[in-house]
Image (cartoon, rainbow, N blue to C red; front, side, top):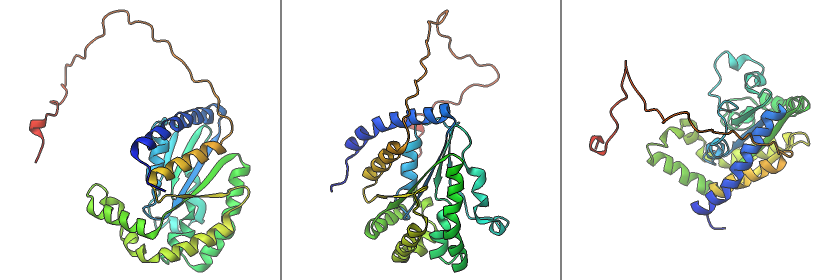
Length: 263
């Protein structure tokens, strides 16, 4: 299948963005709690699809959660404890860029967790998620796939692009040769945690644009009917001429010009 061109991608995405807006309006109106987990290969495109989903959402309603390495104190807590404070409240949407499934992925493959810790996690995760779902949280889990050749090309792009270099970490570099290990870890994770109450959805992200559309369409199709009337506000004429800004104590910075651009 040929890579999806930008114009075709944007044309297909636009109506989905309107549906996402309607879905967010329904979440708020109904007091629902929506939680979406994004897992997958390094470079697969988790950040890109999260940006696509959230680009027009109300920033007071949704949160992106991307937790750093656990602190010394957090490493002594019950494993799921550091994630609980980030769960959504009524009317909220939480998008997790990696989640508690770190334990079944990078922590397992890179040796940051023991076999006993991983085994305990695989038993506890379905129970933990059943508690969330039983309490009414709408939980969706996505795993983004891509071939190793494509992953290598994206690593090289990150290394070459100074605006993307921050995405490349020592763990990424060390994990490059562990592609097959990550596959084995993923399959064991799916076997243990793909449940009726919290199923996994795998999405092909070799073509990131097509992958985003596939994932967003699937997410929208799984949500209940979201038909909440959009509020319409009248904008009567102003009582007089529009006012211009006036300044007293401070004045705005001089406007940027091409002549001032640095080499």
